[in-house]
Length: 289
Figure 1 (cartoon, rainbow, N blue to C red):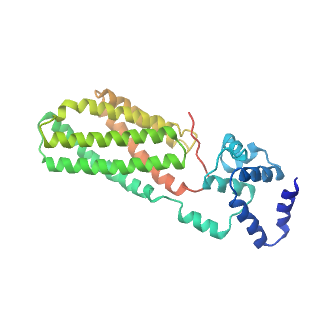
Figure 2 (figure 1 turned 180 degrees about the vertical axis):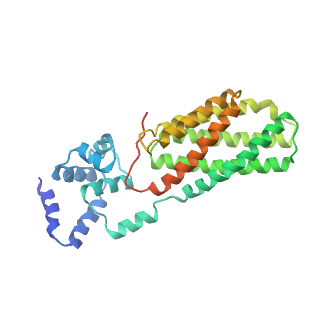
Figure 3 (figure 1 turned 90 degrees about the vertical axis):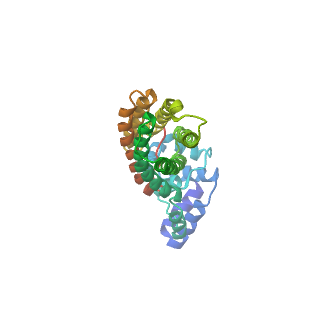
């Protein structure tokens, strides 16, 4: 054991104030000093990297990169490591972390997802009638349903983009960005078609349906990439979204696709509700295929 580590563990016999001062100093460390300190304390406690993995639910590669100073870990990852190593943050640090634990966009995204889910039911029903040329509703109601649906989905999508940064998943982030952009483009196209003779709604309808199906396939793979996290929720939601995307992309089986999509989107809303309390806590989901 190095002299520095002996000095640290000798604090076990000292006052709580002295221990808190050392803990606070460690929490303020930056890379690569932080990685070296974590490595020193782990070795001083007689732990291998694999044993530390089991204690804090991270993967070995993450710990290797942190200890080597290759990456700067997020706050919840540092917290997981320090709790496993017996390093406790002081009260002021804990209060500051809790105040900023959950970004407001995630609460807005949850509300947006619920708004989108119900508004899209009316939008899809109206859209189906409108394409046939026989519809019993006013265009103003159709436009309102579309506007509420796109508003809800954009906020919902941005929320998932934020989640994919907090719990790293590059594929999911890119997929939702593509879906958000395509949704906005088609919404604007629909508004032109509904309010001017420049383009007819039915002329591009099948292309629009297929493009959404393609995006759902990408999003499905994105959720499946969370297969080692959130129990089996990522796999189930990803599978449902992927199947719905295949059906919708072919547009022939779009009706069946909507059934799977409804289940998938309810799952996405439920998973977001599950993840909000997890933000900033000790477990860091892994991203892999």
